[in-house]
Length: 127
Image (cartoon, rainbow, N blue to C red; front, side, top):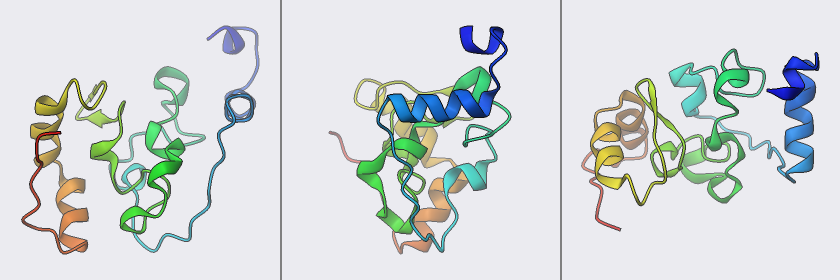
């Protein structure tokens, strides 16, 4: 917020954030839709809600890159801390597991990915 108040534009702030936190955007040639594209949440790089809510953790979760043919965590958002659920941001996955589990099971994107991946009968299990 201080940088915005100082007059630095959001694109410059995003670049600085990614650079100084050693995040790298991996461009994976996804042929399937990622959550930020489907949900139009505005938390993608350059999105309208980045200044308010920050860049979505799915974009910078390199550990999930390529899973379900997605970019970073873009097709496994239900397992990434700090993702949306309706209009709320969910916290640490393990701590909020039951709440997030229920919310994600009703999410249209969750259903879409599971159908596309042949996991229509996918169920969460306790960690």
